[in-house]
Length: 326
Image (cartoon, rainbow, N blue to C red):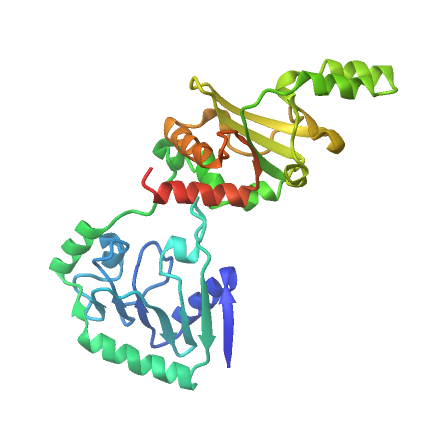
């Protein structure tokens, strides 16, 4: 029997495996795993890839645990015991398995195979061959691991991260569903609203009160000349981000209250309640550098900026900007 697993189901199954007897793990990277480790476990890891901490190795009994070994360039994630075998992508770390802190687990997958089956037997044989070829995690190996280790990416503002609160863009990048689940999209725009269009809409209102209301609508809450495909992406809540030509920074939350699709217009007001998110107005200089880079990519061939994107799309832009070295 085999079973495809992902997310929390995968994490639960991995913990079930390592809770069994005769545990064998060929898992590349080890961090804050939360396992109830015992020194009869047989473990093969990687110490030069930069993702196994010396403190995690010490928790696994290094440098005195003869059952703890390492192989250069190991990238496998195989968990074996009498409860079965998991072959997948999740490392033995907070990012691979998830924790109660501010790191969200990565999207991991794996397959479970029952104890005694063909796949389980092949995995056990492969593991023992690997274990025989592996090197002990001795004092020198611990020093190598310490020099090679690179901590996982943390929120831009360390002080706020230590307080358990992510910076705004970190939250978008790592948890876009927190935004999309609240009906939030992101708007990048620099063109002023066309007051003539607003005036025409007001003139066509049969109700005098509505006419006066639209005419007096705050200009920073009026958005005009938007194509239909952009209006299709519009959500109830909008976060506007923009850096002006002279360096003026705009980070403003909107609640959409009126949409005139035939005129490409929507009107907003200040949200009546907080969106339960970090204040985007308190973004760091580093975050604004990321936004500036993204804005440059969002401009069209005429250097015009007017885009509405989803939280997931914004998260992808942020990840790409970080990977490009900012």
